[in-house]
Image 1 (cartoon, each protein chain N blue to C red):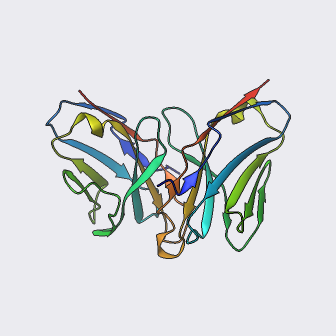
Image 2 (cartoon, rainbow over the protein chains, first blue to last red):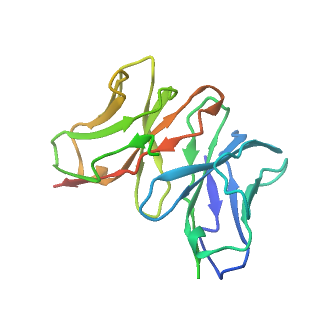
Length: 113
Length: 114
């Protein structure tokens, strides 16, 4: 009974490159959430997706960030032209429906050099 | 604008004693409250939750209390064990269709000494 799977666990990118973070939800879960934890801060909501739909992206930065959850395959969080301030832990969470507790993956640590 | 606050950055407790972690919130629209535990380099692990229609929820050694009028909740761990040492996050949700849209506190580092 696999939990939420995220990869890569650690990613190093140079400024200006693109970062792609992947998330496979728990089996039977069709709702995916992305959160970001900056150093010394709590987790902050970024985006909520269902299969092929973005439900709520109110926490996403307006530029360079995008997310998708295609019909087949994992959810992807994409950060274009990364800057040092994007260095953070990115956590994905999933739930079986929209009114249920969400369960987090192990996280992906992005370092921008 | 910190809508969920954990005012104690750290707490140190002796093994076997009670640990009490506190959390305050400001948004009256929050309807559902959760506690997560987190180890370094790992994701948050769900511990316990409470709906706004309740004032207490218990699960084994963990009890969460909610005081809606004071906009305050607390997590009690009794008895505390060294394995409980971790960062504890309080989180709040507006519920409804936005259950998973959580607002987190900054976390409290709990250290349980043997």
